[in-house]
Length: 222
Image 1 (tube, rainbow, N blue to C red):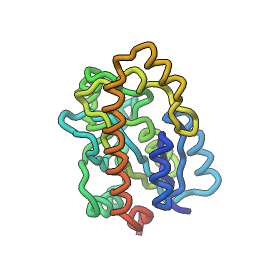
Image 2: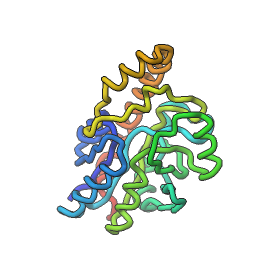
Image 3: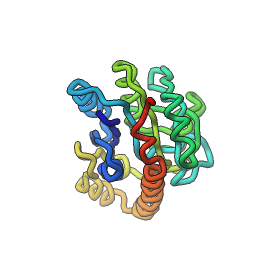
Image 4: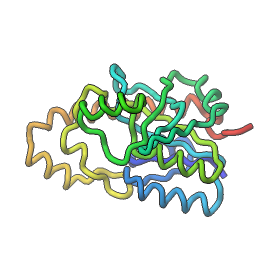
């Protein structure tokens, strides 16, 4: 069976599907991601797992669209899960990406102060909501895994309240929740527009990376 790309957003899932990868997209909810991933592994072991999508920056100075091909994932309990080193080396030669660790969070890190504290505590360069689930599932199943992420919101930026609205289970934005947040705080509209622009940069970077990696991405172990 092919590798499985694990995402939170439907836009991320569409990029992975266009690259020919089977996808699990669970709306950025770690418990749902774990359940769907467990079912997929149980029904037929994949050859590897890929945590794929956008991320929040934790290290200062990472601009939107910066690719991160992680060395390891740090879970919320502090456990460090290294990625498959040989697979990472093969992929790293196909596009330019930053190394370092990614923190697998269970909630969005919205404030710049929270991101700075998380960076100081963990040393991670980025944070997302799927990578810890992927790393832990891979460890249990004895599967290789990788983490490919692109920065959408830099460490120095505060996310507007609407950006923290929970996604729908299929990874689509909950537009009703977003509109309600904007009605309550109209001043966030300009920041939301900027975030949407930065997210598009990150998604384009991810698409280019998958195209560059090609068949090497689907061959975790030779």
